[in-house]
Structure formats: C-alpha cells, structure tokens
Image (cartoon, rainbow, N blue to C red; front, top):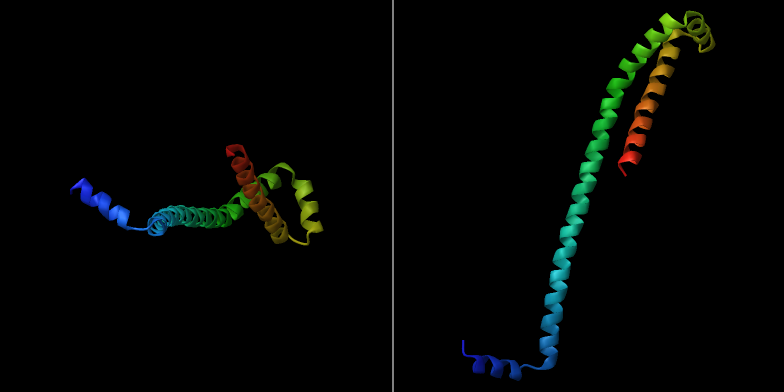
Length: 119
C-alpha cells in the first residue's frame, strides 16, 4: 500500500476516533489477559479441590487400618492400660473408634506439616 494514501486516511480521521480505537484495543487485550488468568485460577481451584477430596477418601480408608494396627500393638504392649481404657470408654469398640479418630487427625496433621514445609 502506498504510504501517502495511508497518511492521507489517517489525517482524515479525527483524534477522538483514533483514541477510541486505541483505547478499545488496549481494553480488549487487557480483558483477554484477565480471562486467561481467571481461567488458570479456576483450574487451580479445581485441582486443589480434587486433591483434597482424594486425600479425604484416602484418609477415610487408612484411618481404620492404622487404627487397628495401633490398637493391636498397644493391646500387646500395654495390656493393663488397654483394659483400663476399654473400661473407661465403655467398650473395646469405642476405644477402637477413638484410636481411629486420633489416627484420622494425625494424618491430616502430617499433611498440614508437609504443606507448611513446602511453603
């Protein structure tokens, strides 16, 4: 294209029109960049929620298993103490549930410590 024709066309346009076009172009590019960052935040939020749900399900599965291991180990190592605890909590099943609950909290406490160390 001939530069003289281009400059003639630019001179014919008013400054306001050029300002509006440049402002609109800048606003459009800014909006597109904002949408990209917003989409990344949404994706990161989805990944974080999926990870937490995964860990919650794993913890629900692991807590009774580790609770049984600790219950069995404590029953063999400290028999009198376990009998007293079973009497105090009105049954062996309740004692097992309490140990499983403590194990559940311990797993999440370990996750919290690992998260803090990574930061």
